[in-house]
Image (tube, rainbow, N blue to C red):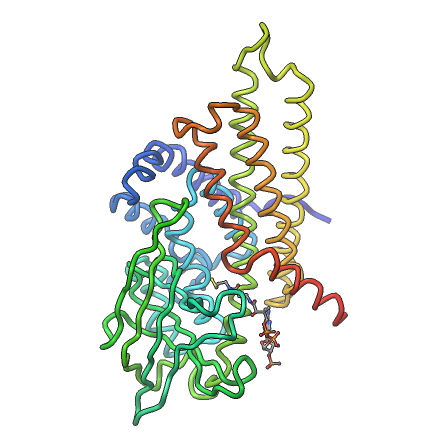
Length: 385
Ligand code: COS
């Protein structure tokens, strides 16, 4: 067994760590207040290739392994969730369908634009009536001549307001639903009938928007069925495969945030004096620090192993991906709670970043599959075995 992180991955992680320290950390508060990432920073992220981390080199990306992508997200998540969110749809749910199932022509048309960050991708699955029950989507697609006509409303779409390309899941056969009746479409923003709806107001993740997407007789050329004609009716399977990787990368984001919260808590406990001594000298604080570090250590081994497994086995890490998301995000929630407790009243103030991490981390237990869905998936896989 070799637990050493390969040299090439350490180099890219170091580069991202420097970006975080020099450029992202200094503007994190401004981004929070303005709910906006400055274009100059987005441009730096483009130049470093961050929009194409996981897109194969043949299509202009860096072609990083799953482990490499997770390591980058750990670093980015140490500063502010919005920075990972900005690049995550291009690397994850907004491009993985294409990487895994796209035709060669589709890959050549779209992946280089997503890898460069010239275009933003998004994943349009969720609807008001279809969250955990993803197969319950109501958006329809009907064939008319050489086009599909889409009608419906999606919501909670990360980067929906800025996306140039959406992978949209629509019902093509009501009877078959998840088993042959949902199709994925590659829908460009410029297609007639494509509209961005309301930008939703959230508890956190400021600087990263989610919005509605509305399809009103949106005409999509037949060649834009993800994966081509043979994939009509196979969109649900594509979505599930895509989410498997997404679940690992959310685990990585939660882990990075937890690591930062531990570091902030260690610093604060050493410098905050009460009853004449630094609070780090009190047993109750030491216990929390020890628990935080132990949980982070366990989560890191689990995430890195599952990412490595995906790199060895291809996509078949359904159970492990759900386990990682469930454990890492809940772990980070517990760590955030302890970090607020260690910081006391200061932990509740916007002046300190722990308050923001506490809010931002709450979403990780919900998006790309709730805790409850992860448990359902894990149990189903166990029972199959
Ligand atoms: N990888 C590949 N295929 C998968 C899969 C996976 N991880 N999970 C399911 N499938 C396939 C099944 O094999 C089946 O295919 P076949 O028809 O070829 O046999 C098909 O998908 C239907 O699967 P299933 O019957 O399990 O579907 P369910 O409706 O029971 O749904 C859950 C399964 C609940 C797991 C799914 O709806 C889910 O993940 N929900 C959460 C969605 C989510 O994360 N939403 C967040 C917003 S998206 S950012």
